[in-house]
Image 1: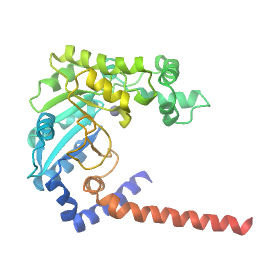
Image 2 (image 1 turned 45 degrees about the horizontal axis):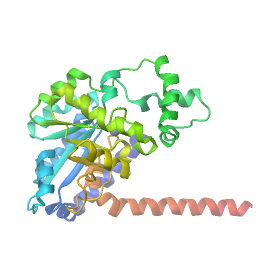
Image 3 (image 1 turned 120 degrees about the vertical axis):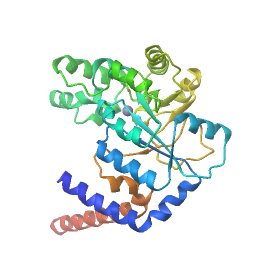
Image 4 (image 1 turned 180 degrees about the vertical axis):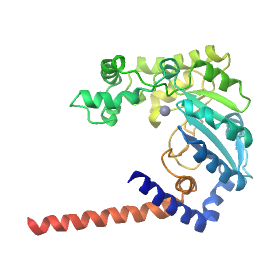
Length: 311
Ligand SMILES: [Zn+2]
């Protein structure tokens, strides 16, 4: 069923891209496109960057983006900034494409998984299985940081998982690559709005310090785990001298936005090439989403009617 849905979504994506590509691309004539991946397959990643390259996007680095934003330079060509969250081991397989298309990328890495090999949410299924009060990973995201850690500590030692994250030698190898910049993604990848002041201070300062010690370089950029942040985060970024930070907010790049709230469009790792391209161009939300929403509402109405007949 998942595969079937993916194919249908990709066909719909292909149709809207085919019909409305021109208008979808127009908005990037004066705004920088900013997209981010997690752990895409080389086929999906290559498909998307090939589309961007054919449609005359120039791939820019975080440094170039920072200069563009600080100088408030006028944009007179299509540009795209590409980043990756979490530092997945699978990202290493994308290097041939990154080199072929000469794409400068940033990878936002949380420190702890580099050491342990895994992300905390990989243990969520075991927590759900063991504790009746937890029904999904979302329950864990909604609780206090210390409470979530207490649950994790109860299961982590019982399950040995295959490494998903890059290790330190991968990280150092990636950092040496001329096209790759490493940024911070906190220390433990917590949900920042659920952290205490003390916990947050550690996440911002120690992730930067550790990455800088490991890589002998200055860490300038940051991406918010899970896209969550509030005023405290903005203060900690300033205090720790980060130069820029990326959200998971898909709004089109706006020159007036803060350097600590740079928008990014999420690429769905499980989606197909054209579904993702139609989302990048805003066509999915413009044409497919409203129909989908309407269809869902209609179905709801039908089921309510059915219930009414019997009540
Ligand atoms: Zn993340």
